[in-house]
Image (spheres, protein in one colour):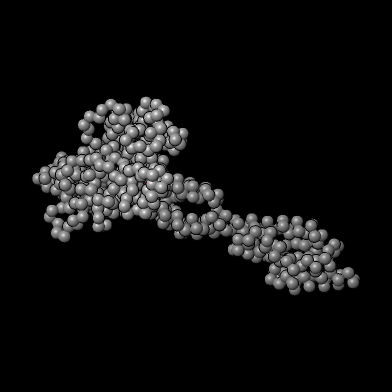
Length: 503
Ligand SMILES: Nc1ncnc2c1ncn2[C@@H]1O[C@H](COP(=O)(O)OP(=O)(O)OP(=O)(O)O)[C@@H](O)[C@H]1O
Ligand SMILES: [Mg+2]
């Protein structure tokens, strides 16, 4: 088991039974849930280490990186102390709210951290729960999903991270008519999970788990109650919170918060977010207990053109790497100029969906390239400013010159094939340049190899060629006519061969 986990999660996590006396180990193996067999979570990161790691992938969001790194360290250090059988003192879990516009790295930050520390991670949209009728059962699915992500290891799942996006959509503001009443229900369901509860791994609605239970009963004569405790699960919620800046500014009495005095820029959402207090979330439509369970609040910033450029050029998860790899699979080397990347960043910025728009912009630029280049002769592609602005035009040019080059290559190949064929069959033939051009175009368009194209002409010649084999002093020529009607041409060759012999 230990080997399995160290392979899967690196050596950050070790399975260890405290005391590891053989009889204790055995009860743990038998799945007796009264035996504490905590994971010896080897968590020895400092907040700075986590931030450094995040820096490799996520551009900007300095505040968010620091706050997240610190909260994560607090959380896992606390767990480590608890699982070392030191009595757990009262501790308020560092659940986190992340504010900020779409596509600026909220999910990406959390996912990257979960990867680093090797705990299971589940992500879902909070809206998913308000749509369905019955709420409690559904939010508990998140916890069960953690167990799946941990490959069935309940102990590991108990230290996982649950990430809920679009949390602002389950707010139930008092002053909005026809409000979505289920939002409050979802909040209460989540609240229960965030505090501490035991979630059964088997749901009465899930046929598979019922079958498993039945089988277990048959083989062991009893069914172990499998539950997962949510005490140590970290919850991170996020949302755009569009109405929040207004609420904050109203609370502050429209007071200038230091930057919209004369000559200064107007405050942005993220400037207001910095002033956010619990009361603002309550005003937004969250229950006070719910807000109280999310003590860490952090705002992510909007990404500017320079940030988007930086993401493409330097971040380790850059979308450009994806394209480089995609083209490389066809033997095409993709390179890019800074100006080209910057132009993409400018385009993406116009869409106001953060780094998310980079994907769309690149997809539109490269769509036709990804289709046409693999079967072309193009071996190099450089992403330039002009390519970004006029992708179709540039593609046309590239394909034209690649086509010309490829046709020349094919002609040369056909020439030498004709030469080899001549020698092998002891018949002197020559490929007329015009015929070579026709054949090379045929090969280019059909994708057939030049050898196949050439063999195609002489497909039915087997017998006829025997008649003229070894003809001395006669040079046959593959002309365009031969290409168009090989049969007639062969007859003509045979005829002229006998005529010359008569002489
Ligand atoms: N700051 C950033 N640095 C590097 N890449 C980023 C950054 N922000 C976003 N990305 C890229 O954009 C993608 C989408 O970002 P992400 O899913 O984190 O957005 P989000 O902030 O969670 O948005 P939403 O509120 O819509 O869920 C990421 O997978 C990542 O590739
Ligand atoms: Mg997200």
